[in-house]
Image 1 (cartoon, protein in one colour):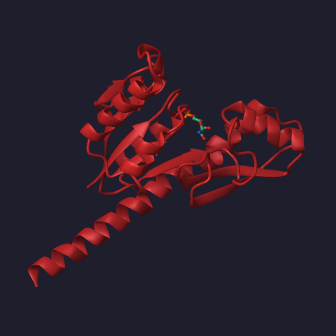
Image 2: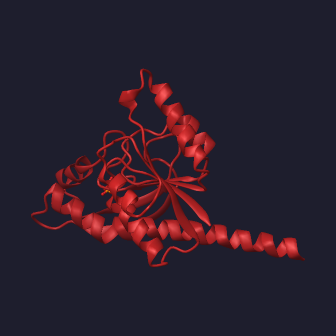
Image 3: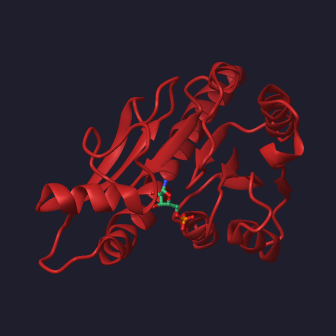
Length: 209
Ligand code: GRF
């Protein structure tokens, strides 16, 4: 079983997509063991609670020093022993200690075709504003591994979405979520879970022979 911790700061529609695909078994051999947020009002927490998933929330505002918050966040994550950490609209920079601790086991969903409209300052509607401002005809979403940089880790999956005449940042955001993000993130997780299950069964076979 792939143990997943999801980190989310907002509405949690990507979290919902992952929960739904685990429920309908499109994602096999995986369970969400923790939903973490930095924002006590994140609707993602409500979605997780409704599904009976463990939630945790700590805000940087409750700590005098940033390092104290980051330490508490890391300890909380470690307490759930995740195999995979999924950043699903998590608006806090992941500290290098955490990248090191979970090396190659953190993934993120970004609402553009990386390397366009990504990196520092490109989050939420700003991504779509920039895409429309540049006049691109195609945008989309990317799932990638997280490294020490911002949106700079190896790409796992991408999906293109058409930009339409008359699009606003909101309409483009909605289409990219519906046509790309909610499909791509569960797909990436399913791939990672299958890989783990495959590895596990090979190890089991070796143990038997
Ligand atoms: C999504 O657009 C995701 O790509 C970005 O943040 C947004 C989160 O939306 N990283 P939601 O909270 O999953 O609804």
